[in-house]
Length: 125
Image (cartoon, rainbow, N blue to C red; front, top):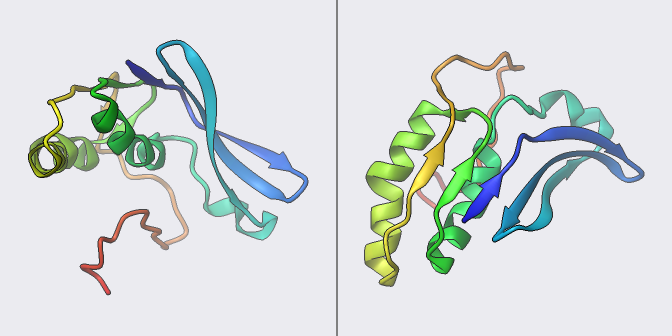
């Protein structure tokens, strides 16, 4: 099983990181995104969405369930379970996995009116 913990924001020498600890069969590691300090106000640690997206295909390839221990957006959770996971499994011939999220939320996040995407697949190009 892959377990994803709560993201946190941390200052580093080269900027600001949004990072989350995860473990695969008990072996811990850190996944992170880094921006210049002037962009730090755009990072959000309230949800694990960016980390779920980053780890999902790894979980599918390894045939391991993915448990997220922090809130996940309702739309992302639904889309992953209804469309993305079945599509990736069927397309690549992997076995089904479970996406286990302890808290699903539809509450909006306070933001600056900007959106970033981690996975466009070219549809918006």
